[in-house]
Structures are given as structure tokens and as C-alpha cells.
Image (cartoon, rainbow over all chains, first blue to last red; front, side, top):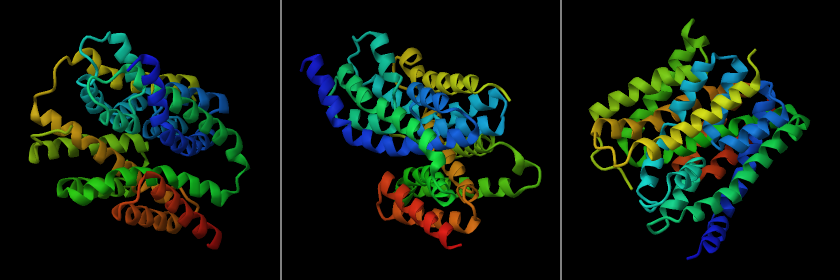
Length: 235
Length: 100
């Protein structure tokens, strides 16, 4: 398949993801405005980042005035899963391909594009990946812009409702595997329990949410890795 | 307050480094089972701790947030996808906020 065909095939396959991104990034734009970013800043952030949980955590850090080092650490931890996805993708592209070609795809390793890429035969054509990026990144940025500009016109109950959407997405990511895997169910329940506990404590409760997440996720994931090693990582 | 652009550069920069790291540094696959397992568990631990209790504190009343949380868990548990879960949780919170 030629580069051109691969590119358009990728763009076409990613269209449903684009529509989803349009609505999800609306929330990001709104959250960014509420944290004190301008519409331009929010839109540029979405153009160069493309990660809902990471951007949301970053916006929260900015809004809370967290030190930059904590912001960077939170970002790294929230995005740690991309290491696994990128690792998997290194095995998918032709080994002969240029590093620069792969790094361009690495710029947009998201849960959804990763899932689409896994459905393709090896070796994965980088241009297929670029097609997916071309279809989704503009929608991600446009949704952010709309949320940042029109979000303020919305009445307060609607804003609260939209606020909740991203948290609900996190739940949509963790609950289905927790249902089929007891280890993950324990991990999710413990993580939420500890998070609620720390939040309720007098002094620790006041720390930035991102830092609380690191305090919980780092030791808990390590404990689970020792207690329940994984022999096979798919795919 | 530090300039928002600095935060944006940190957010974008760290995200790219995390995504690019395996392509640049790891030529083969990671063999260490503990590290593999750690990386597999981290997303669940982080996302769970981010969702709770913060979802309940993101609304006007803790009760509407709690109802949204319960709705999200219930829909996700019964097989609802990302957008269905988000839409229904938002709907529940909207109704609660208007009623309360």
C-alpha cells in the first residue's frame, strides 16, 4: 500500500475517535479557562500535547500553583502507560525505518490511536499513523478552543456536569479491567481508598492532587508488581 | 504565579519525552518482570487515585458528585464505553445540581 493510501486509510479509521476527541477536549478547554489559562494557551497546549489525563493533571497543577518539578513528575506518572504503548509500537514499525519517522508518531501515542494501530498488520506504516494524527489532533485542539471560549457562557450546573466527565472517563478506563481481573480490582479499590483517606487528613489533605496521586501510585504499583508479577504483557 | 506558557511547555515536553523514550533508548523489549508489572499497574493506580475523591469535589454539592461517581462505576461495570460513561455521569450530575 502506498504512503498516500495508508495516510488516508489512517485518517478514515480514526474519524470516530476524532468525534470523541471533539467532545472530550471541550472539557479540557473549560478546565483550562477556570484554572486561569487563556483560550490561546489552552488551544496551543492541546495542539502540542494530546493527552486528556495528562493535560487535565497539568491544568490542575497550574491552577493550584504547584512547583514546576511536581508538575513534571505528575505528568510523567500520569503518562507512564505511554511507555508501555510506545514499547509495543517499537515492535510494530519496520525496524529499518528512520528514528525521526518513529518519533513523529511517538508525538501522538494516545490510548485510542494505540488501540487502532494494534489492529493493523506488521510492519505498521508510519504514514497510516500520520493519517490518524491528521484526523484527530485538529479536533482535539478545536474542541479545546470551543470549550475555552464558549464554556463560560454555560450555566453553573452545566459546568459542574462537564467537570465530572473527565473523572468519569478515568473510571471508564479502570473499571472494565477491574471487573475481569481481581488484582486490578484490588489495586483500584486500594488506590481510591488511600486517595480518599489522604484527602481527608488535616495536613496531607491540602497537597496538590497530582502529588497525592504520585504518593499513592508509586508505592502501590511497586507493591503490586512484587506481589503479583505479570509474566505475559499483551500484546 | 508562574507564567502559563512555562507550564504548557513542561506538560508538552514531559509528555513527549515519556512517549519518545522507548523509541530512543530501548532497542529490544524490557525483560525485567517487576518493571514490566510496575508499568502495567501504574495507569490503574494513578487514574483511580485521580478519580476519587476528586470527582465528588468537582461539583457544587458532594452528593451530586457522589451520584455521578456511582453512575459512572455502574455504567462502566456493565460494559459502557468511554463516552457513554462520561455522558451519563454528566447527565446525573446535571439533574442533581438542578434539583438540589
